[in-house]
Length: 355
Image (tube, rainbow, N blue to C red; front, side):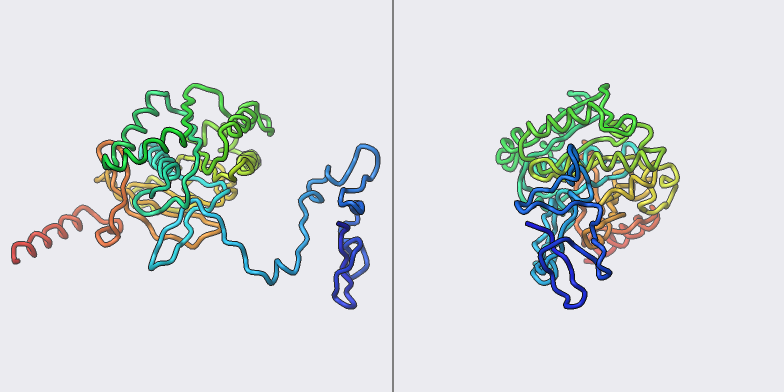
């Protein structure tokens, strides 16, 4: 359809070229569309489709202002008081930050299983619907990946394992890439590895989630040292969200040294490297030790969100096999010293003795 123009005198839209109240065309440099809806050519070999702004521009209609908004699509939600609360939006790029060895790879593998089976993540967040997951481990060998998956799958009760087995086998595409050149951006442009990833992801069918672990293997050195390179890397990641299924793209990333200090709190500034990495992500959470003495106690903190309400910290427990589980809210605690924990245990023992 032809464009529309705004007449300031009667505040109506009419068919024609968009103009401002001064009478100057809003898109003066962009040729109007032909009557059949196709862009008109400015000259041979050049059309408005070559202009990224013209091709991406949208018209704000009356429906935008007055109709009910469509419900946002979520990858993960949680339920509180009968209300479904969005936690991780679908079709966006996000990041899970932690220092090495805390458990971010295991947490993301557990997320892959939750999405593939339509189950819960960390005993708190529900996958809205089951779907296929592409899980690319940049630092793992096939044996390492197999061991991780075995530990996660074995953590479920036998009855659940039997019900989940087929979904895990058919819906998780596991790609161990240790030793491979998988940097997605080189010299500021999408690399051959990026093209290979896009092609392979399309072959995987409709995807709900793509996990890239860790960012350093896929982003390259400049993504962590140069803000312009980091922004370009995020743009390349956003292209993955346009694949069939509009998948969420999550990266594992390391925290910086300052954030690892004793009693350092969670912050969006704790991600290592360029601030543009965090700025470009639409969702960031941080996984950290609850204290430096009990390494099995962890805390998951949301540190950045563009489309959800803020979440309170979630306390987690890491088992001997590295699998993470949620600590029930009523028994979870904020960060405490060892003396405080011992004092609480003593009080509990005394109360039981009195009974």
